[in-house]
Length: 375
Image (cartoon, one colour):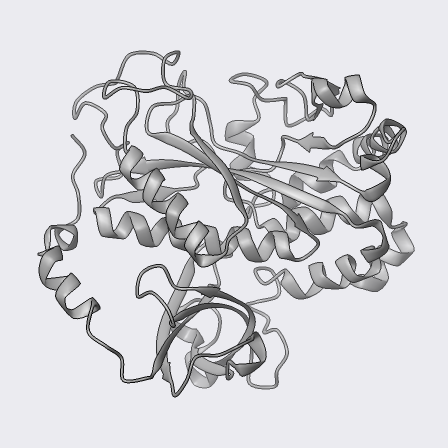
């Protein structure tokens, strides 16, 4: 059995005694932001005199950017700009979770943040294509690990039986860590995340949750906070959730973040022609998309997109109906009804959803000049 953290072994009954104390009319607000790695999440909490009714009631705050890879120590104060508010499933109502953008002292993205804070540029694109009512749904795969970084539930000095019985499986020999999955699902629902499902994945100790449909910038906001909730729930259980696209080498599936996409025209009668047009545009910019579909410009996805284990080759673009070995899949039902959505299967599990949705929206709905103006 994979090892768990010592903090998870603290007395939870004692913890609950304090969590049930009244707050004297005050409100705790936890500020969440993406750090300079482009993958890590940070958070800290402050007290407000009353429950905020909207995001406009949340004051800006600051933090030490030199400790989060976002600033130099000589000028390290960074602004936290609240952009999206959720209920807090850990400390309960009236307390809030607030997702923030990061700006430097002059209220501009710092040189450290430009490559990791994609929300602002994504939002510009989403505003430009608003009339198309572009919906996204992202399927977040992840793997549970012990704090020894070995998959949770795997034999200490070996491997579980080969893949086959684990996908959507049930039973103690097939499902590793379901308690975490169910707690995360409830936490998302309580918070107000648009989570729409979850399931066990092909590799044991690997799971997936889905968020959407979300329109425009909402997709990135909700997925980032859903990731925060996942890491926070795992913390309580003493395990680690990794978004590594290929956590185990060998004959084991990797982890992706399949992205489902539709516009108003695609959802209407005869929408298949617009789906096919979008896929044609995506085919011409395959390498550009690969560069933004993981934080290291395709290096992480290179380990995953091999053409095996239900993936396409990273080097080639492909599309097909109900084909999980293609870059872009048209679901069979969509092919039958001639309308609906398509699934881009290339984004890695550790992708930035702002970068992914911006790239797809730009390629499918903007010409190159409009895209340059949005940068």
